[in-house]
Length: 178
Ligand code: HEM
Image (cartoon, rainbow, N blue to C red; front, side):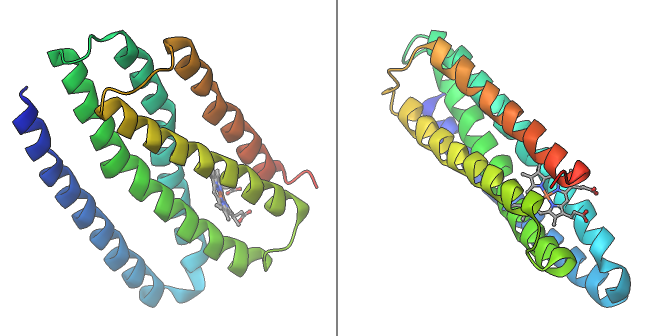
């Protein structure tokens, strides 16, 4: 894959993401007006679908960075990793995070009036996850400029953080221990 085709390949990914978000907005509006009394479980379903997509990306991206460290700078393999990382971030992780937040906040307001220790702790954990998201977005930019200086071990350790946060978040929202 050449550098030029790598640049051009972002276009279709962004187009798909825009179409996906537009379809979601239309679907949400339809569900809201067709079944306003039953919208809460639909919103929860969309929230969980977005959560799964966000987590899939957050678990896969640092793994890609681990492999990327070992690819020689300027090699075909390294350029391919750049495209994979950028597409994963822009077409999946970013939109999935936005949808997770929008529906999560709506559920928190509608279902719980933003009350509950478990909910506050969950929001704190999701803020940490979002911070990690920002850190990974910065890492993708650094790798794209061949400026990463961190070893594979660092990215392997970073890879564990979303797993731990996910376990905490799921226990908080399902068990609601406090
Ligand atoms: C700030 C962002 C978020 C907020 C405000 C939020 C809030 C909520 C609320 C209020 C519910 C409904 C709970 C119920 O009806 O019992 C819910 C459901 C859920 N959330 Fe989130 N959430 C957020 C992000 C996340 C993330 C990042 C994950 C996973 C890593 C997650 C996993 C889930 C799951 C699995 C459910 C379904 C729980 C059930 O049906 O019992 N949420 N969320």
